[in-house]
Structure formats: structure tokens, C-alpha cells
Image (tube, rainbow, N blue to C red; front, side, top):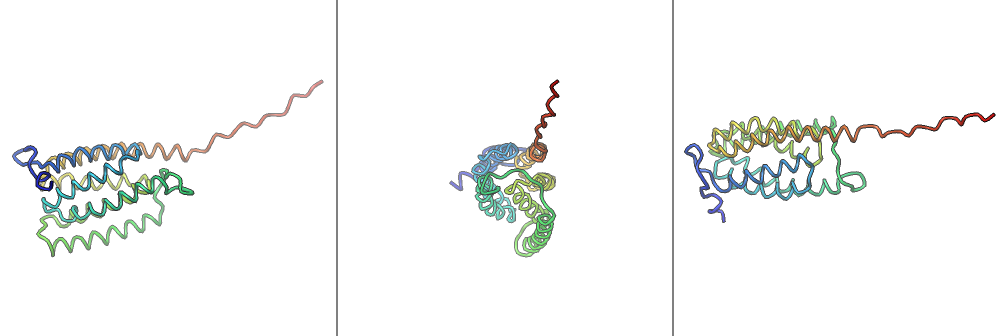
Length: 219
């Protein structure tokens, strides 16, 4: 099965495209489209997508991204559960904003993770892109946490990550995956718009009934 996935499906600009990359493209687009529409099916399809990308990234020497996919499987299972039972009194989760405490933890953890991964990739692997690999890994984990908790700002973090991923994958010769992340970028804008609209709807004060006026006096 692994040999079949790593085999060539077709060639783009003289560079072979593996079946794992092709299937990763299809499942990735479907996953983000479902996520933007808050459909629960985004989670199982997303798990299949990250398993395919794990094979792809390992063979391309993007070791941090490959390891990240294992974490994504766990986060995908958690996100699936959280969307179903993570709301008030174990209800379905609704869109909300990231509070100050969450931002503090996310930014701090992201900075530490970036530094540690950069040092690890630079000194312990043959990675040719240790810093961008580390940065995108940290941003992706931050965004995935927000996605699991339905935080609207997670789309901004995904947009920042995609703007780095696209030239990174072009540089590594993963042209189809670079195209996939360009599609992701557009879907992230759509997701941001949809989730912000949902947030405004949930935040709008409920219409208050008009109190009846005094009855007219009778002669």
C-alpha cells in the first residue's frame, strides 16, 4: 500500500506527482470546504487527509510537517468530540472568539515550539528548510486548536500559515500540494466570512417582545 501511494500518478512541470499527493489534494479541499460550512464530516475526512500528507511529507524530507500529521490525528479525534459535546452542558459547540488568556497561551506555546523545532531540524536532520518548516508547524497547531474549539480567529492563523506553505512547497517541488494550499487560502477566506457571520448572528440580542400599551379608557 505504501509503495502504491508513493508511486507516480502523473508529472507536473517535469516533477512526478505521487498518488499520496493527489489523494491528499482531493481530501484536503473537501475537508476545508466542510470545515468552512461547519459540517461534522470534516473530521473523518480530515483524518484521512493528514495520514496521506504524512506519507507525502516524510518522503519529501519535511520531517516536522510529517510528525505534525500524527498530532493532527489526535487533534482531529478531539475536535470531533468537542464539536459534538464541548458546548454548555455537553451540547454542540458554537463559534466564539479567542479570549486574552487563550491568546497568551497560544502565542507563548507557538514561539517556544518554533524555537525547539528549528533547533531540532537544523541540528538533527538533513532538512533544507528548518525555519519555515518549524514556523508552519507551530502556526498549524495553533490554528488547529482554534478550529477544534470553533474560535473564529483560527482562520487568520491558517491564512498566515498558508502564505508560508505555498512558496515552501513550490521550493520543495510539491507543485500540486502548493496548488492545494492556494485553494486552502481561498477556502480560509470563505471560512472566516462564514464563521464571522455566524458569530454575529449568535451575538445579536434576541428580539424583545413589545409590551402591550394601556387599554383605551371606556366612556
